[in-house]
Length: 581
View 1 (cartoon, rainbow, N blue to C red):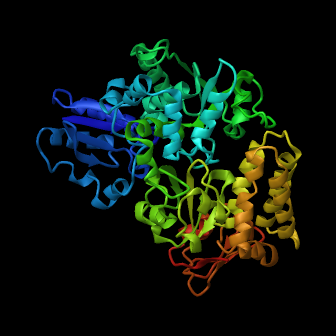
View 2 (view 1 turned 90 degrees about the horizontal axis):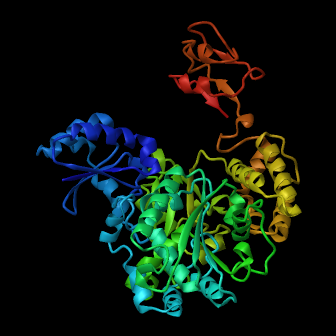
């Protein structure tokens, strides 16, 4: 029997390391093998423990605590009823059963720290096939037939970028993996590296062979220490086995691989800014052309793709480009990984074929809105994406359909919002992020985002003015059309889409000085209904600024001048007497 503890970052944050330690003690002498794996994707159920007999999964245990170690020991000793209270429910099992996993196919299953686990699942077979049977042109043609588009956000054809680097003049070429995942609410790349680092390595080696690169670099944000640790170990193991280095698998192909830890600048998700950072410069975009395929890292031909793009490559080589192209839509092939977060019942990683609808993902896989609240919007594409309203829930997930809504596919962030979310506040949140992350190179982005943020900040504080909406729209167009790189060009998207679909909320903030979602603190008014108040004095005792007065057993009153709108009175009132308007 093999007992496997999920130790991705999400599992560790939920207490998986303590569970593992407790199991080490409890299973001593039992004969059961204890191991670790990465994130299976069901982050909302962590810590997760899987129990195997041979290769067959016989039990999945969820929300496991250290105190459950003895139950698991009893199960290992033959008591099959010992863990029923922590066994995953059929409903939660559907979270994975309704997905199609290619990039995530090994995540949460193999031990990411053991190369033999990866090899046993057809690992490095695709690399062997490429080096033994295929020319670089054959590889590029296979990727072309798959229809694989770059999963970093732009959706540019992968084969085209590879071919451009392949055809570029010069012997010195570089392959770069963009693992600088900076979107709030996005953790797809981190999970792949933590859970299946050899899949990334194999995909990169195949790409390096295709473009003629002898050096491969993974640019990963330093805030991902576990990902860096496991990828470093995986590279060392691959070097020991002859998959990285000189004359790989006895052929004339040689390629080395290194890791560069970035400082976490969102703008370094733009490929030329990333290249500048790699070269020791401040991460700021270059003017294009020339494109990286002609003049990239060290001003040599270079190719950049993100983690998820490379994570599909080995599967495509083994199964054929046509098999990948058979999934998805006419313009968007294959599967896409999303980080499902926000006001959702089942948050985590989701990999689905292109062509499913937003409703399928949010309600069928994600289980719907937390506390059965009303769905309001989903923000797609990270801080540069857009907010899609409830009336467009049946939008198909592909690049063209999402772009038509004003959102973008992006790298795969999917933030779900319910009726308590203020859309003006949401636009302000994302614009605050992009304004701070602007590198400052171009005026439109550096100044335009700040002016937009100032207007939004004024609106949510109740100081909005007539004409602010029109001014926001004008600024959005100016920043979008005048910014140098994708960060600035897409920064207005959250504002534009919330203005497009939730204009009434902006008008309520400006004209009525009210927040329809009752979320903007400065626009709230707390009062006490004298008919419901029992004079228990609990609200007065909890008020941090003594803004509530009244005698015991008599109706209390809130002094609006003193009230700081902290909500303490509302939270403690047992009679529903405190009202928020």
